[in-house]
Image (cartoon, rainbow, N blue to C red; front, side, top):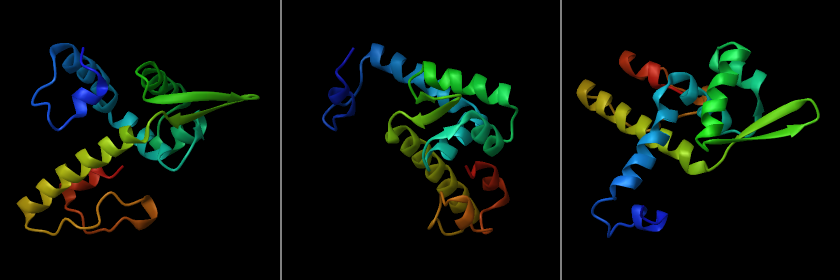
Length: 140
């Protein structure tokens, strides 16, 4: 497998098969809307499983299952303080990846609808109601 620097190097025109497999396996973290919601909730800082369950609108058990997958893949870390466990994003580039994909998708939707693409990926308090109906499900 290539070194991480080689994978991300602009000079590299293709990554090797092992690196493709590694990235593909990690992308399973992004393959569920609840996990995307958890990523977005964690961009503001560490949270408990109950806070994340509330933000993702799922049960504690369901949030815990998703967090286990995310932790096993290295996307989040857990830190116990007394009775509580706090989760954080292990690398801010993971949530930046969510943001880039979200912005690319909403740009496509807006181009199709003939709308502007400025000011996307806003925090809940900043969200504009101007997103096309098809894009509202992408707000995370």
